[in-house]
Length: 228
Image (cartoon, rainbow, N blue to C red; front, side, top):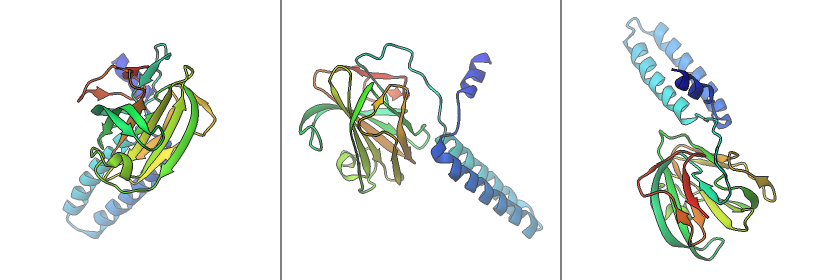
């Protein structure tokens, strides 16, 4: 019980969800009140109340923002920037920034995952670039270059450049990035948020040691996905 209570204390609602949740709660309450007084039978009210309650619980789950601290030495460590599942580990041609081959590790977030994103490495942000685009299913390869996305390049204290790409999915309609060029950030800092289903790609130098496998579930700011 003590462990469960500690976990609950570390949960909060992400700032990206506060506005949506307040408005949704008001509209649900208004609709339920109207149905309650409009019909003699309470069946419509009960049905709508139950369905609305389930949908609202799903939204609360989606906008969770757990407070997490990485407790290991961060030197050379690349942590998972998001909760989700590893769907790609392969060498690819990265043609937006590096224009050479890189090791890509991709994490897919379902609608049930926390959608806050964390910084994958310590370092200084060299580039932040947002791209408007399409909304293909996030697990498709073309999503990395055709979907709405944000590209972030971080230079680590050791001089390595790590590119992270936040990608909107078929349902997602907004990619939010908090980082600013020229600023120093650390593991534990929030990188941004993607609303409603998405994916995060991390591009690393060839020769990087991979610490995860395909299909493995990740926990943002906790799972070590690679070591530089």
